[in-house]
Length: 390
Image (tube, rainbow, N blue to C red; front, side, top):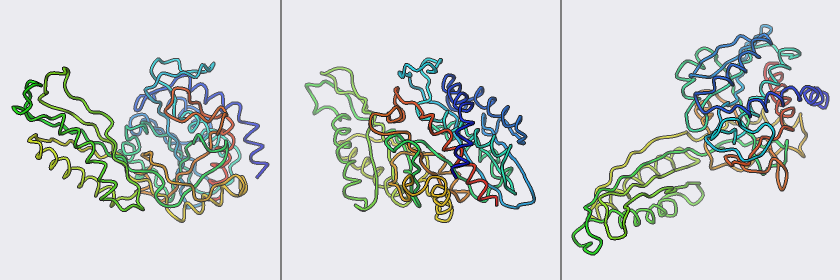
């Protein structure tokens, strides 16, 4: 596969330029108008049948060759994050408070580079569907595209996606069969008691004391209700109550983040958290209102498709640069919803480790996608497409 990698490296500069242009002009979820136009224009110029605006700002490019019946989906995300960039790079964000802090600019560039190569020199027979998705960062862009007919218009027999990961050597591919990323659910808990003078707490129902007890009690959900061999996280990320040291407030509010790597564990967490909060609140004489908001599903890579994705990685890079069964991640990803409809696999490409440029973690003001991955990621997509649509 050295020839394929050499070809993609030779073409990489143009797509690194596109990546940096997207980086300089980041757009938040469902506002990726410039980015989606750039993607659509290039796909059209290369001969793809293109649909714009699916899921708001999503783009799908379809390329059909030969009489093959198989249909493949490859997905990249396009949205940025509401973060002020602090990289000092020449191509740093030109939009205050918005930056590509998760590498979606790189994911888009990798898939575009593969799209160009496959249009010019791709050897396959079948249907290739390239999905450029908006609003992965909490907006549920995958669901929006699906609700607007993504897989009805562009049926796929399998679907794949790739994400960069700092802390893994640059260019190394990491795959995992089974649950690979956690579900994410959120809750706002409002505790309503009876406010009063801080010197006369006996004439109040103190929501702050109740909130403090609930924060501590919630930690027992994981330690005492969940199988120790299963992963679960319950985080209270915010607690708001009161403004003065001598006033017991009427109410307190908690914000929760809840994650799991198993669907049954996810369901159990909701049941136990709601029951525990309600009982704890009642024990302190306050009332609890729980606004539970389901987020992303558990991302589960299917066995057959993951085995195929491993074969492609090994063929492209060799065993020394491939992790066959990487650890699961507690982060979340809305590609999980696509995998609930279509079998497939989600893999990682190392962004760098140690003191390297790409080692800064995602969602950090100092993060930047490693341009050395553009050719490798593109070569992976080309090889996977040609092998799948054989």
